Image 1: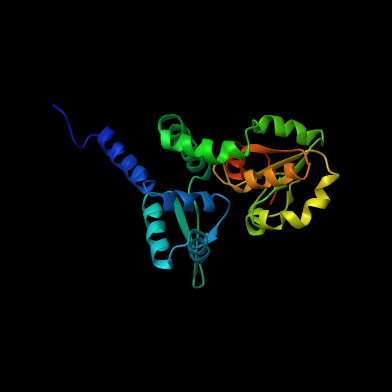
Image 2: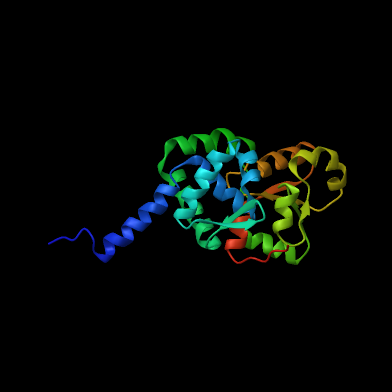
Amino acid sequence: MKSSSGPKQQIFSHLAEIAAALAHPHRIEILELIAQGERSVEDLAERIGLSLSNTSRHLQVLRRARLAAPRREGKNVFYSLVSETEVVTLLASLGRVGERNIAEIDQVMQAYFRARDSLEPVSRLTLLERLRDGSVTLLDVRPTEEFAHGHLPGALNIPLDQLDAMLDSLVARSPVVAYCRGPYCVLSFEAVAKLRACGIEAIRLEDGYPEWKAAGCPIEC
């Protein structure tokens, strides 16, 4: 006799709530943003291009699924990830399954990402070795407030929209490794393209700050 309310079914029901919370592109984008550090509802709404009410509704779904948690400070509400390492790992796994199984994702990867950078990105392990021997300049092209929440050790922060004005300062430096928010963030792809166009040796990190932190690699705040 099968039970519809046994322990396995109860667990599956809660897992389905998590899956349902991920079933919207805006909510995945919100998770990517708060993986960089705590953010206010207003800031999230501005970055995603939604109204405050719509953003709040998406955040409530993530809160009920225990993926994000609020913190009130006066009249402002800030959100951060719950179980940060596990949520970042979950998003990375979702991306890998999508790239492997969904043809449309592979087409986007080919048409945009790989068209801009066909070179193999540098791995976390290789970058750690190069940071130890000082043979690379590490470039964080995220916005300044995200950099302030946390970044890779010794990284130089030049947001992408300021990179053109700072190119001369990078010409004489060692080879550059650029990183940003994650594997689907376009900032590092655009930065590497700009640097190479100016004759600067540049390559991307294989993913971004959240994945680096989730892997237990050292960070600075």
